[in-house]
Length: 318
Image (cartoon, rainbow, N blue to C red; front, side, top):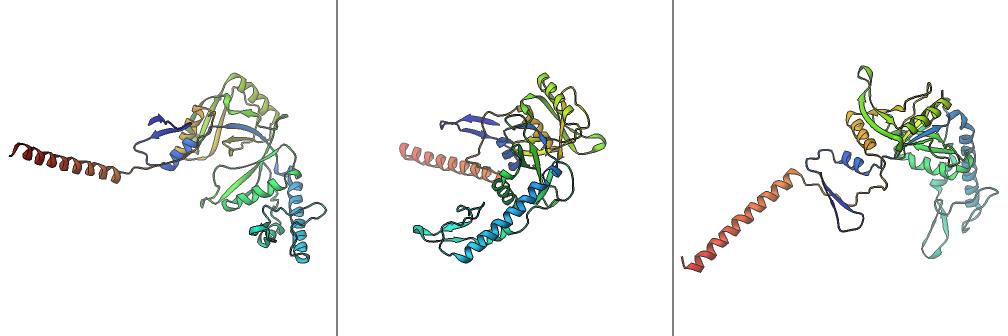
């Protein structure tokens, strides 16, 4: 590829001829290789908290319904423990006219949104792609219910063939910062390879000495539990630790295609970027456009040659 630094601050131009998969290139350019290893919660440890969300959201909807029935011009509705969120549950008309409660949103709160399946492990549930924003909102709204060190992250890839459902993981913050147990900057090498007997593709990693020592300590303490491997905010896999892992070697598996595994290898090898990348402009020059440019250039050359010939004839009286 041809990479140029533009005059504008913090902008670069990248030209890549022969690209056949633009979406894949976009993902590679915008990935920051922010690799993290997180401890996890077992879903059984969080069941009471999700039931509490169902209870409080139903009470919330009931309080709003009651307020709507008794008051039509109130600017705020308050109960003992809940208040109407003016940002999302009411819409304000122009020039300060009276606020109206969005009843469809209230009905959304009235339903029991979380149901425990009885499964174990760090996956707390699944949701359709279109519902992930709603789940994120509820988890953020009622975050005070959960332990302070819990973090929720979505899986990076859908789990069904129609590519509509994603898994939600419960991560456990480590230490006083309540962050990942290990950062990805300890990874020194990565290699994409196919599993034994032609199974799914995976990416193996090698850590430096400090990372290997820390990794052995973590896996020894978390034996029988899951460690989530998170890249750029999405969980790629959460394998169960069977035993203490020495030597700083590990692998990432996540139903990869060969291309995805190769891309992940390249991203991990390049290391974590100090700043994120955002594509602000994109132009695709296809074969037809390139051929058209060649044709236009040839026509312009012929016209210029004819004009030059006529000018020469007039100049010398030929």
